Picture (tube, rainbow over the protein chains, first blue to last red):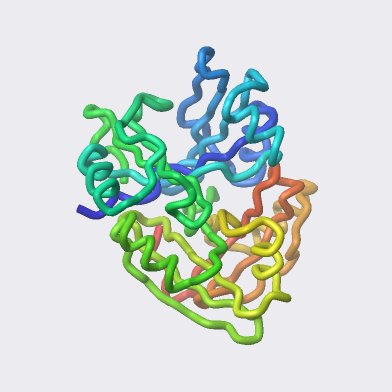
Amino acid sequence: VPPQGVHHIGIAVADLDEAVETYRKLFQAEVDHETTIADQGIRAAALQVGGETLVELVAATEADTPVGRFLAKRGPGMHHIAIEVADIRAELTRLAAAGVNLIDTEPRTGLFGLQVAFIHPESSHGVLYELVQLPDDDRGTHG
Amino acid sequence: VPPQGVHHIGIAVADLDEAVETYRKLFQAEVDHETTIADQGIRAAALQVGGETLVELVAATEADTPVGRFLAKRGPGMHHIAIEVADIRAELTRLAAAGVNLIDTEPRTGLFGLQVAFIHPESSHGVLYELVQLPDDDRGTHG
């Protein structure tokens, strides 16, 4: 089965509230949902920009976190692309068999209740891809 | 009017054919259209990954071009996000009045017959955004 499309684009930002305000001004973006995950040191907001693909803004609440280190090293900017799949375990098995370098060989729970797994950018020409599978009760509402 | 969503994500790649092959393997991606623009020194392929947002792979055929310089400086990776709007001139007028730093104050013809204009990343937290308006005969077929 081919994927269901681009679920979201992940963008690292220094200040979440300021960035949300900017996206309102630029794209009349609406906050779809917002969350803070204290133990991962992140605050995130998923924004609607008129189509099915969301823009996910992620800020670090602590410097010593993956997003905090990304921001320190590269500054704010595009971080990853999330591709929605129907069956993330089946996709991970298929990709592993094809020799793709997976950061997560098993799905884990990501933001907003998604099941997620990352592909190593060395297998995708320098782009960090995330596979996402929607929670069962959100199926069919997107993509 | 709010935008019509994310039209495509632009990604700079070193070798277009190799990258298309990788995207076939990773995401069962299909080439929607492909083009070479000799005088801009680029080759590009727009890929379908199952949803309405396309992945646009762009390679440089000459080193001394915007994409060639991007690749030399930063390596392959995410380059820009294109937001589809119904009336690009109206959007540019609105954004300019809001004090947004525009790279293109007038739309110009981009890849695949799109009317395009770029927003300066300093106005969008480090992300290069492109506004796109579809050619008249493609309206309603997307987004």
